[in-house]
Image (tube, rainbow, N blue to C red; front, side, top):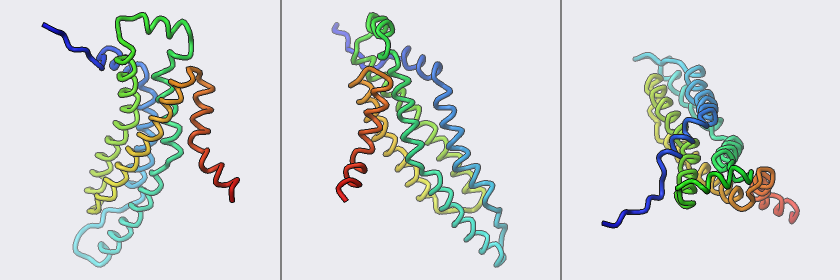
Amino acid sequence: MQSGTSCFNKTIFKKNITHFWPIWGIYLVFLLYALPLTLLLSTENPGTGTKVAKQIMEENLARYATCLGGALTPMFVFIAATVCAMTVFFYLYQNRSANMIHALPVSRKELYVTNVVSGFLFLIVPQILTFVITAFVCFARDISRLEYLLYWLLYMIGMSFLFYTLAVFCCMLTGHAVAAAAYYFVGNFLYIGIKSIAT
């Protein structure tokens, strides 16, 4: 009976999740502060059946839009993606660590896929948890336009995917922490730099 080749290693995945929990923990705290906590503190409970309640609901909706715009911060996703990619591929930056990891009975494809998935989850899971908690805050404040919250989540996932894949590419290309960060920065701002020079 032929055994299938795995592309994912559960042990390395668990090690990444438990060993590097401060990264996704800090990112989760930032997102919880930026969106659900800010929304909860800046809005009021409208109550029922009065003209004042309608005015409060309109103000809540305006503050909701402001909070979503404030929490949609590409720069923080830019930084978080860099940190996640450089952390899970940190073993590449030292010869001893790279030789030790690649001497394990784990294929390089399996190691790469596991690290890419675990690093990407460091970004996505806090965003999904923030989405769910913010949805409960919206229910508590009678804010019914949850499609905007869904758009926020989709934008964040899209930005995370783009930033993270470029960061992983830079980490695998260089094998050096400073060079990876420099290439990542240049790769993201190259278009803006060329455009500003050309105009």
